[in-house]
Structure formats: structure tokens, C-alpha cells
Image (cartoon, rainbow, N blue to C red; front, side):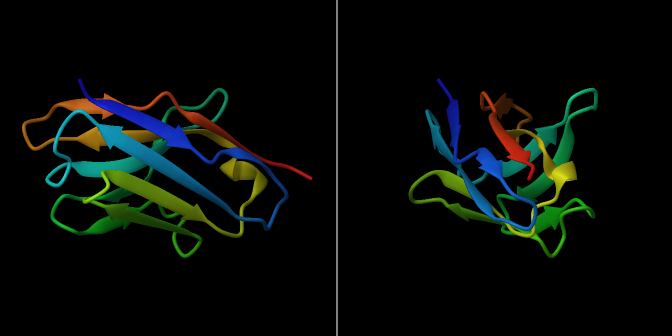
Length: 116
């Protein structure tokens, strides 16, 4: 049974930093695309960053140069370092795993609030 568990969310002031982590279990994730999505109140869930099983990364334009995604296949973890946070980054952040055959899994989400 695949499980994704996020941690690291919280309240931070504008300009601050946070690091989100996702611990994956229940499968071999080396070949899966691992990513982070977010959903703000009243908005659709959107891609933030993805680290493909092939080793490439992709970021939403709104977070480029501020966020960095990383993964550790030996530990089955994927992390998101978020710098220079803005109020518009406030959302629930979800970890996502997408396997080559199409199976997709989500974590429960972690709240990130950027406010003074």
C-alpha cells in the first residue's frame, strides 16, 4: 500500500523560508515522478515542482528561482525548499507520486501560510 506523508508546513513571514518533506512507502519510487502540488482556497490544485524518475526537474513559473525540489531515492523522500515566500504561496501543499504505468498517489497535505 503506497503512502505519502508530508511534513514541514507552518506559518512563516513574507520573505521567509520553509522546507517541506515527503516520506514515501509501500513501493519502489526510483522510477516514479515525484512532485509537489498546492491548492489555495477557492482555486484549483496546481503543479509546483516535479522531479522525474529520469532525473529532470520542472517548476511552475511562479516559483522558479525561489523553490528547489530534491529527492533521495535511497530514503524514498522528496523535499521542497521554499525561499523568499510570498503571501500568494499560501496553500495546502500535497506530495504526489506518479508511476510509469499511470498509477498516481497523493499525500494528505500540509498547510503553508505566509503572513505577517
